Image (cartoon, rainbow, N blue to C red):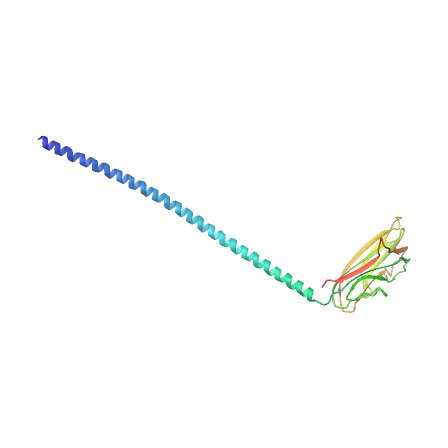
Length: 224
């Protein structure tokens, strides 16, 4: 009888031990699966980050490539323009001024700037005061008129005797010299004549001055 009791006790002990081992194994398996799931989720998040980074990097590279191509095209265009201008033989530029004063110029008096400092292309004549366009193109002209105290002088730049720009140098109410500068951009044809003159419709009073300290001058250059 006692042997049966001992045997039954051993069987119960083995069953309890087996159940406890099975529960422990199950718990360990669950923990392992949980850790694996966490690792998978972290890897999925990292993959998404890498994919996003790759997409952004690709877009950034495309933007940089587009900017590079745009700058390259602009550089090519500018280089072509510079080469064209450098290779253009139609260079024209001049600068001249009066060596002496001009006393009481009458209306429609051509101002002759007899001292020439620059005359590239030989378009300006210091004997007549006329600039004759050697070539067709766009030209920029400027003229400066200095008048004596209590004087007023209306001057204009004309192309083929048609006024293109007008200025007034007025010191009538001030006992001091007065300086005025005008500028004109003109599209010229070959042979067009440009000059500075006193306004043909307005009476002039006083004198135009030009000396080492204040030059009455005329200048121009071909832009295109």
